[in-house]
Image 1 (cartoon, rainbow, N blue to C red):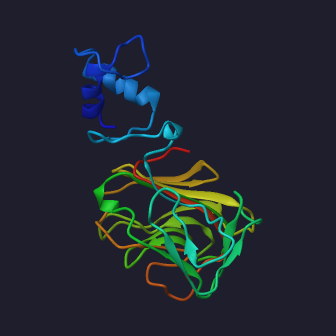
Image 2 (cartoon, helix red, strand yellow):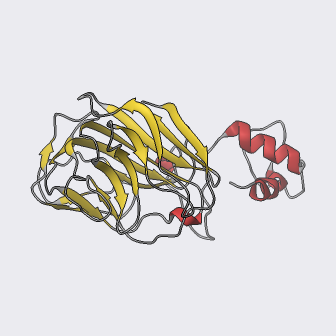
Image 3 (cartoon, rainbow, N blue to C red):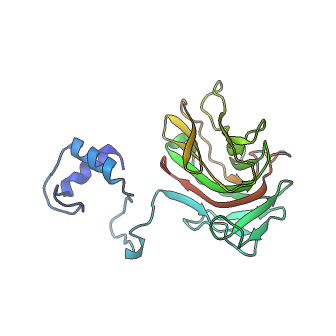
Length: 252
């Protein structure tokens, strides 16, 4: 929700209630709306006339563009529980329904296993976040990349620390952390972009951050467990679980 949208919403907001509703007159100021939006930190969904929302979805995170739980037991499809961006398995990945960080996970061999997904998000269009649970891996191997684009989440080729090669401008450099993610333990890794800053997270702790010019536009699909051009050495050797993509900069 932008400040302008929040300001408009104050027309239907009574200060003594925490529920927006139609009151028929303007209430509040832009500053009030900005404060409310910041402190409430609630999810927003723009609905069209006549659209309905099931009451069971009231807690749903509408910023979630894609969510591959990777809990399948068989088959060659990684289902997207947030939408229809279902991934297709290539190589011979193995479903591990009892070995994930959250229920099941997908095991990849580091040679030619990966998941190919449709287009989900354009980095040049605005804020977004990607998170995943991983175990294993080796320096230079990639967790998530955009096809023919950049490696979004990876183990740095020099020391296995979390890094991203998603950058703005030709002179920009990759961002890397000092935290090794290839130590054989489960780690939740993440990258957020708020329109100005790249931030890396390991186990929900910020481990690197910098400021960048605008990111380049890209409208290709994604690879889970492989580099953007499927080069040898970029395939992940280990487990990947619970991959999520949001259309906002998520703070764990």
